[in-house]
Length: 145
Image 1: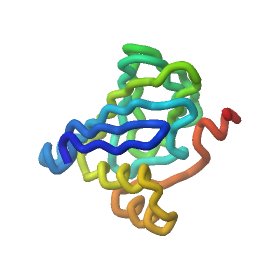
Image 2: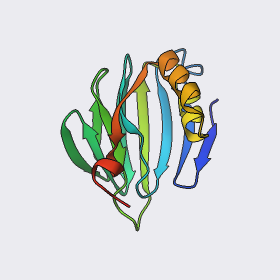
Image 3: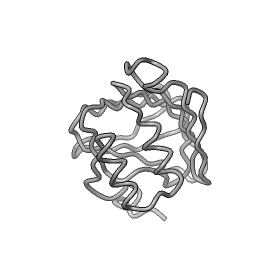
Image 4: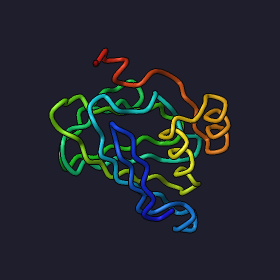
């Protein structure tokens, strides 16, 4: 799925590399993150999840810490550590490069999540790709509207 694109009204994900295209070494996508977009708090069983901010601001929760990442910043969530992110700026889309190691086919999980898959299908995908949801999105936690 190199060059694959998943679009929703509040974000766009462009897969630059997948586990299939890197022999499982890593996956990389570019995200344009709109206001209040972000996944529920979750953990990856085996993947390390790294975010590099190209422009804009991304607010992230890694473990219990909430941090604001600006252009040029990066953060990493090791396997097993709860994490999430959101864009708290209504006036600017945040562009983020996301690298996940190893590459286990997470693009399939993202495609399901972004297409609005039913909860049973998301649970199946979560089990298959080692993702467990453990809390609300950061936008919910921060009570953003």
